[in-house]
Length: 65
Image (cartoon, rainbow, N blue to C red; front, side, top):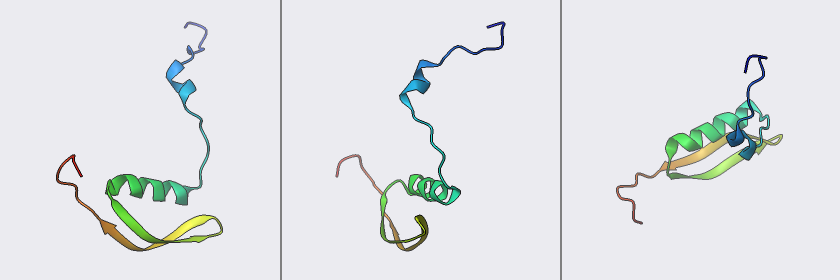
């Protein structure tokens, strides 16, 4: 548009944007990187993840379980 206003993207209406603490973002990003696995113990302090004491990584060799 010539007035500098972008048209509303209908796809963005499906999402709710929130601000999260950088520590939570790091934890969520880590979870995405390991794909499959287990975090057996997660220490939370002041509402934030601090330490994952034992982390196991699983590798999936097929799509079927």
